[in-house]
Length: 110
Image 1: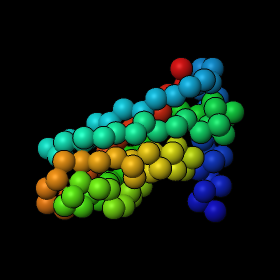
Image 2: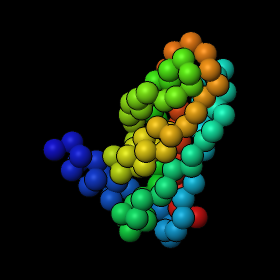
Image 3: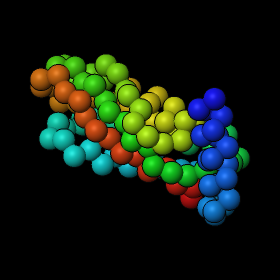
């Protein structure tokens, strides 16, 4: 039910945006833990057809060895959240104590 609501809301909001194309994501993590390998998110084909853009907020749970153990969605379109989670789960951080890293990704058609 919630997914359907977000899809309809995303579709309605997408009419306010320009033409669709490729998209990019930017990390705005405000934590001190350094990212040593970053995988850019893939802009989903369905988002292109819907001309969907937006901001996704997630929390990455990072293990001591720097591997991402879990990516928890905080906000954003479910379609874009899935793309963000898929990419961020492949990120690698510098070793340190286990942490929760807040990440904000901006998806925008080009």
